[in-house]
Every structure is written in C-alpha cells, then in structure tokens.
Image (cartoon, rainbow over the protein chains, first blue to last red):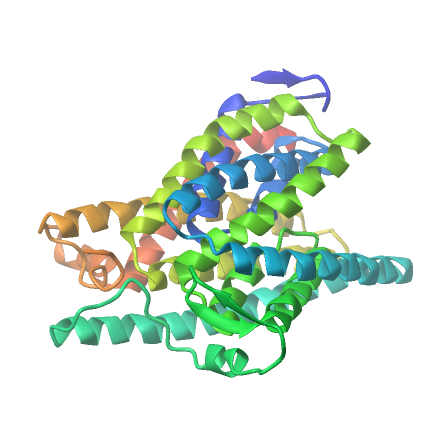
Length: 354
Length: 40
C-alpha cells in the first residue's frame, strides 16, 4: 500500500503497475490509449474522478510515446497520413466537446453519452467482427490451397470508394502505399475526432477501423499511425490536466513503470501476427467495452439504485484488461510455437506470421 | 493431450475466447475481493 498525498488516498502499488502493464500491452497492440478502461479502474481504486482522468491522460501520453517509437522502428507509421489526420482530429475534438457541452446544459449528457458509446462501439464491433471472420476464412482457404498468405488480408470494398474520390490535393502515403485525397483523410479525422471529443476518450478504437476500412491502410500501419495521434492528443490533455492540478505524478510513475514494458511488448507482438489477429483483438475490446457501457447505462436508467450493476461494470472493466492482455500473450506464444513446427490450435496458423 | 471435453476450448476460437474470458473474470473477481472491496 502507498499513500498518494496529492490524491489523498491509499492504494496498492501492485495494481497500478499491473493496470499500466495490461493497458500498455493492449494499447501497443491495437493502437488505442485505453482511457475507457483505465479511468473507471482508477476510480474504483479510490482516486477522485477528475484525478483519474488526469492520471490516465498523462500516463497515456507517456505510454503512446514508447509505443510510437517502437512502431516507428517496425516501419508501421505513415507520417503523411498521421500529420494530415491531426488537423482534422483537432477540429473534430473541438466540435465534439461543444456538442457535449450543449447536452450538458440540457441535463441529459450522461444518458446521451452512454447511448452513443453503446451504438458506436457495437456498430464497430459488428463490422470489424464480420469482416475479420471473412478475412480469416479467406486466409485459411489460401493456406489450404498452398498459396502464400500475406501479412494483411482485408476484404472490405469501402477503401476503393474513398480512394477514388477525385478531390485536389491528392496525397501519396508511401509507407501505407495508398493514394488518396487529403480531404478524405481530414474528413475522417474530423468525424473520428468529433466522436473522441464527444465521448471524452482518445478515439483510437474509432480511428484504427476508420484507417483500415475507409482509408485502406493495413492494420499494422493503422495501429502505428493512430499512436502518433494519441501522443499529440494525450500530450495536450496531459498538459491541460497538469495546469488544472489534476495529475498525481506518483500514480503516473507507478503506472508508467508497468506501461513501459507493456507498450514495448504489445508493439513488438504486432510483428508476430497478421492484420486480422489485431482486428479480432480490437473487436473483442469493443464488445466488452460495449457490455460495460450497457451495464452503466442500466445503472443510470434504474436511478442508480441497483449497485450490483455498477459492480458488474467494474468487474467487466478489470476482466477486459486481463482478457485482452492474455489473448495477446497467447497469440505470441502460439506464433513462436508455430514457427518452430510445434502443435497449435487449428484456428491459429492463419492469424500468425510463419 | 487435454481430455476430449476440454478440447473445444482450444480447437475452436470461440471456445478459447470463452476460456480466457472465464479466467479473466475470475482474476478480476479475486482482485476485487482481495484489494478493492473496501474502496467501493
């Protein structure tokens, strides 16, 4: 146990390091900040809500920086795509925050936020899950026919539509190997930024599918490029929270201790898997987060009387972090076993790099 | 080799999903019981 003087609470160090490691692993692997998991966890540990947001944002900025450096070494960042998107994201976040303030004045921001979270996350889960299953089956069929399976298999036709929009200026994203109108990238930045600003999250879980299914980037490039966005937005958020005095640096330091290892591991793990494996983990993250939001929504709609719903939401948040981390670790273990010719479950070979 | 009824948990992706989720929720329940109960 450690006394956090700034936050005025006593909490176990082990749990902070543990949360830092698990969310660092997940963030490095699927390219999200993980704020939707960390903030509720910190509140449960006893940190006040505003402190939880500040600590979360500051640790996300540090963790995303580590992941970004590692993804850069792996060649997973397209700087043209990242920098073009940042402009749209900033504008979108501002619009999202303003709409949120409007709903706050109406006194219905809590319910609207939760309903929007459920709809957006469940919609993304459905699309990602259906498309990834199709890609997985396609990879398995290719392997059965003895054809070479690439690192990326994507079956959505949406990127062709968006890449064919002839609006000047057209940009060539050399690392992502795509040619697309800059307006498409900026517009996607605005929409994903709007959702991020409105929902009060980093927005990685919206941007990664958008980069894959709308822009046409490979999943690995989408993850690396999105982390650049998170460094920018997380850095700005950390600065704002620090100025407001919402950051307990001791808590951040303990979380970063775990996140440094987790972010490195999660980023390196992407080198062991094919694109659909990353999208599977992303979709699992989305459905579990949706269930958590449904539980919180039910808690609010029942007049906050059924404490068991809030408790279940907390258990699900903690369980989700552990689940995603274990799945990523086991994928890496299976990939290594497969590489050495050892037996692995039959669904694994199409998902890992051999 | 694991016993036959347990093979579904490894041979099917859904089975593996269910197995890991059960383990994770169990771990989350343990964490809650050991460290967090007093804070709620």
